Length: 189
Image (tube, rainbow, N blue to C red; front, side, top):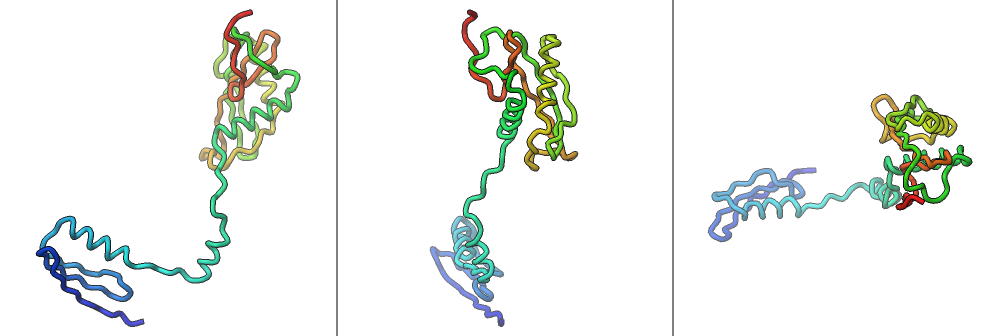
């Protein structure tokens, strides 16, 4: 394909413009005596006036691709899936309904999950000192393993994700998880 060169000279609003085009409209040089917003307009017009038509194979591939990708799961989505698994594996310990206003215990557990959903590590991070509630929280997490596999984009460089979850205990020893708990009662009865 031969390259055609065209030199254009134009006088507009007292400005002498010289510009050269090669081929199908790609601008290679632009000479202008004075600068200003008019120059920006000319450059914008010259660079946006061209369209490129992709080969038919690219056009057909784009048409076959889905128009909107499915949203990737968020950290909150993943934590909700973990909470659901804990509830499924510990039905007798799950508190149904409203947690009491003054909780017996709140146990914050730190845990690590690998790319396959395997529970790598778990420990009590914060507690009020209720040993029974701590043991129940850790045991209920272990019973739920293996956990759902985390989305790849949430993994750290070691192929793991580190999380925190809070167990909220009523006096009867049943719990809800902080991720998906019901509103707490507002008065002590």
